[in-house]
Amino acid sequence: MAKRSKFSGPDDPRVRRALCIVAHPDDIDFFCAGTVLRLTGRRALVDFVLVTSGDKGSHEPEATSAELAATREREQLAAATVLGAGRVEFLRHPDAEVVESLELRRELVREIRRSRPEVLLTFDPTPGYRQHPDHRAVGRVALDAAWPCARDRLWYPELGAPHETAEAWLFAGTGAGLVVDVRDELEEKIRARLLHRSQTGSPAALRARWRRMAGEEQFVQVDLR
Ligand SMILES: [Zn+2]
Image (cartoon, rainbow, N blue to C red; front, side, top):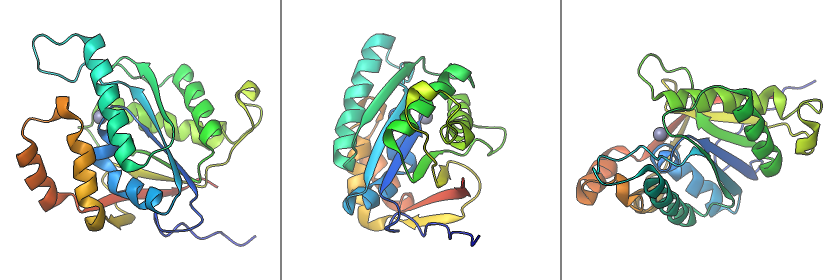
C-alpha cells in the first residue's frame, strides 16, 4: 500500500479538524496560537482540551486556587474566541499535579473521539531534563490516548466510535520538522495571549518580545497511521 504523504501544515486542506490538548490556560496561546489561527481562518474546526485550569499559577498573596481557576478559565474562553476555537473543555485536574494515569488517558480518549481530529496538537514529552511536569505528562498521555487507544474499538467501547488521528504535531520540544510562519497571525496571537491578564506582568514588554520572537511556531510531526 502506498504511504500517505504527511500534511504540509495548517494550510493543508486534508486537515479539517484539529484538537489541542494542553496542561494550562495560555499554553495554546504560547505554543501554537498562530497555527490555530491559520486553521480556523480557513474554517477548519479546532477544539481545545485543558487538563488543568492553572489553579497554582499566581504570585498574588491573596488569590485562592478556586478563584484563580475561575479567572483563568474565563481568560482562556476569551482567548479561544479570538482564536476561533470550537469546543473548549476543562478537565479540572489539579495544577502541577498531573501524572500519567489511566484515568486521564480515558478522559483524553473520550475527548479525541468527540472531536475526531486529523491532527492532535500537544506537548512533545521528550525535550530533556527541564520541562514542566504537567507538560510532559499531558504530552505522553495524549499520545497514548490517540495511538492506539482512541483508534481501537476494544478500548473504552462506552466512549463512542473509534477514531484514528492521522498525525500529532508536538510543540515545546527540541525538534522542528514542521515550521509554520505565523507572522501574518502574530498580532491576533498577541491579542489572544494578552487576554490572560492574570499571567501578564507588562503587556507592552510582552508585545515587544513576541513581535521579535513569536513569528514562527515549530512542531515535531508524528505520523500516527
Ligand atoms: Zn503550561
